[in-house]
Amino acid sequence: MKNSEIKALSLDELKVQLNTERTNSQNLRFAHSISPLENPLKIRESRRLIAKLNTEIRNRETALKSQNAK
Image (cartoon, rainbow, N blue to C red):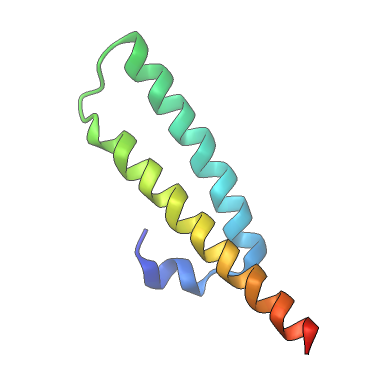
C-alpha cells in the first residue's frame, strides 16, 4: 500500500486496515515458524505497513486534538 493510498483513507478505514494487517502479520509469523515461507520478506513488508498506518493514525489524531484545542 502506497503512502498516497494511506492518506486517501479515512480515520476509521485506517483503523480497520491496521487491524486487518496486524492479523495478517501474525498469521505470516505463525506460518513462518512452522515451515519457512516462500517469500519471508512479506513479514518485513507487513511490519512496515503497520508502522505506516500507525504513523498516519497518530498524525491525524494529533491534528484533531490541536484543532479542538483552538
